[in-house]
Length: 454
Image (cartoon, rainbow, N blue to C red; front, side, top):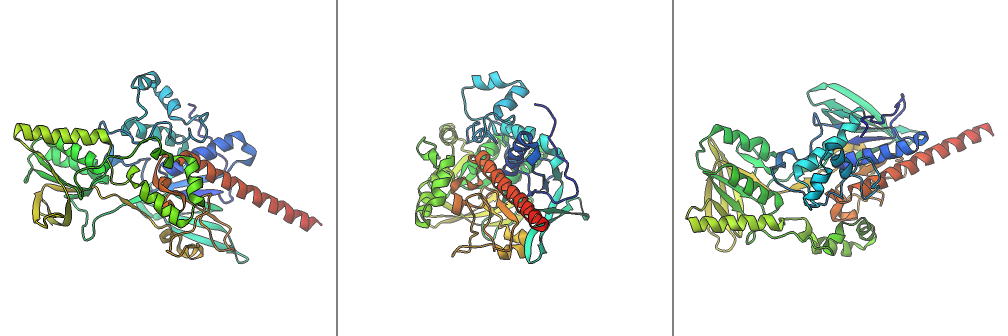
């Protein structure tokens, strides 16, 4: 692929869009806009993105060796929207010289490492569009004649807050991703980690050599928890790994063909139009496609390990079934995990070299960033943001700025809100919405000029 990044002349005027965050979602949006700009340079959209990381990265702390994606490579950043795009995973493989080798694997699921390399390959095209190492600290509405037609996006350099910049935009796309969820009363620390930091923290202990307690405790029942257990068991051959699971071991993800239809683009249309009662039912019915479930092959691998260790008489992998974490205490040489059996009520303490929390993520409420503009966002009876089908927050009539959400819309758009499955299509929908609004502004400006001339 040509390394021409297609950057456009921004001039001195406001951008059509400022994207806050540059993870896979806003990267997919950048690609959709770039595809449009190349097709129709006369109607090119001027965009930029602000990302607090110093370079592109996606769940780097869980890029475990051998771990595979749970989504087909065909659900990359573009194929479901336009398989002719130059940013497909297949084009990436061809440029890397691995297309035939990948095909010979007879698998739809690349490793997480390879897919991350694909994402970096895509992101490299947009260096001119992206301000890395900058954190958005404020979004200020700009009022003109009682209307909000622009916002000022204020960012600071992570390395030095004194380096402050202000960009004016007609629209923003909030793609700040998810933040780690920790159990109530538990705080992260030197020996208490969320899985997000697993590959940043565990190698440090491995390099130190001897462990004080020769035990790791992993809390959680989902894919990340099972992968962390497997990784620690493999990396620390002299340590015991205790998996604290609130059910009888790990449950398999439902990836059967009919259940997978919940991830189809058409399912978003159906979900959005459905009554609230149906929305809640569908989320409940299909939770086992994504939440607190594990790939079947990994479950079988861990079970075989447990059984083989029983046979050998050296049991290092302990699955604490129907058990709940009740507290974590930081200690000088590790962490102390308190757990309670849900069936017997018996409490015990696990002295650990580290406690790993595979307790998932939660969405960041964009209103925390929007400041006064957040007060103009409409909400439903439960206080949740009302979001239009084009992923734009519904706002008061005097707000002309479009606020697009990349995630956090599960209650309106369904289970794929925070997943990769529909990124390609969603980015196209947001791009189309931006173009409609762009054309509308042009027509209004032309009408105003004609009115003045008349």
